[in-house]
Length: 218
Image (tube, rainbow, N blue to C red):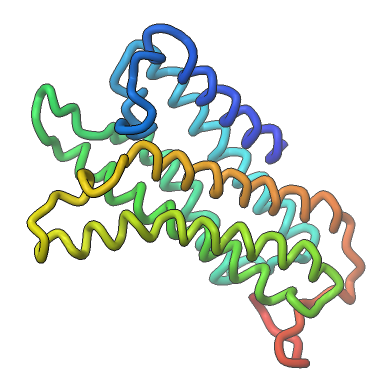
């Protein structure tokens, strides 16, 4: 169910790139959230909802498979990721034809939190299992988590250097391109976690992540 939700998100957002009139949106310059301001907004919202519900389903499967303990920092981060996806639906981005809005500011904040929460949560899970029986899946998930953080880094750097350069952070690079690379890395991370949960279920009772030779909680 979780992997299906992530795949549905990819398919729906991909369709927005080729179906008129959303195909008129410049994918290199305009962010993905731009689709929520046009005729096919419901498709974009459905895609995010599918990804949010799918991510929660994968998190539940990881807990059941004893890959990640309930109530851990990793669980909290992955839950925050799903909550941020739903918040993005409720709070659309700025419609610059009307000017800035409170909704747009909330949208920008929860998007940043969500983009960071997923790779941090997935990274915590992967790091805890790097020497366990699931180390192959752990290293694959960790690689995707690092790629997600690297894809986010240009946005963070541009934002931090804005007071020094005077250049608005969204004008430093083609923002739409950077965000789409970031989104692909994050959805790939979700799918990797889902595949890990599939392979780990059902888990033996003795399965425990190992850190420096000791049993720990993620």
